[in-house]
Length: 373
Image (tube, rainbow, N blue to C red):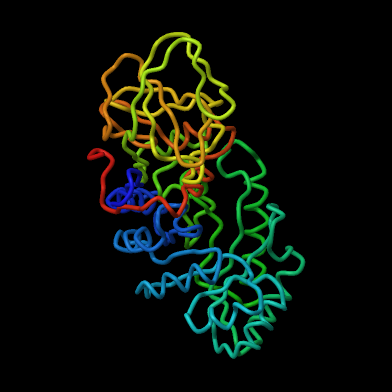
């Protein structure tokens, strides 16, 4: 590699996690969500691994993401998870990407694109209040799909807002509303084979949500959907490690400041290692303020000073450290581990944002298990 920073992607962990999710889902199909470049892990490699492990299909957010998977040789079913701009619909049709629709306009766009019997999933808004047809409009949209030669209703879906909080009664309320829609459409003779409400948390914690298909995102990458379901996510294995090498070593004295703003001042002589990775690579600038740590020599070392665009600094005390030593920002070294969830907790966010934020300029190296980092 041309630089001393990389992300290791353990595809064996992807396969393992899909197996865990398949067991949890029972008879339901598992579709792996690989939007946002596989939550930062690399959509094509993750998608292939997930399909190898028995996933029935893949889900993306954008037509461009689905086209990239097709260009990479994936022929399995791919679902675009929301209604798309008219200009993208013809490309979706050409590349055989199943489309999510929730209005007559979505069906009309397929007709203008020249689609014939194109697979669509009708999305219902049962309480997320993001996208989807309201319960009162579902029957009309379903009839519009059924009457159109451009579309074929293969799926009915919704999205759960608080599935990662198992005791929250609003998930049951959403599922009640969704079940009512499923029943009403069945009574009207519309029974799509794919009924899905479960995200990762729904798959793990809510048997009612599993239906005939689940859409698993963050759990595919070995990350718990939230603290409320941590007890159900213990078998998952983290997929991403973020690793660099020490690029410079220096001694500092008491009273010396470091990095922009000199916001950290040393109270003792110490050894500082510079690591060539920064916020342009996805290490948040404010991680220093949150008490961020890295692993060098199997020990936790604090980041000192604000993270800069291309570099950060680490206090190594009086321990020996040399240029080229390996630095683990995410992953395991010895008996210690730093996780994306730890970063998220320090920064007041969620692990999804951490992995999605790892920059494209960080090379992804597949088939590098964390225990080999």
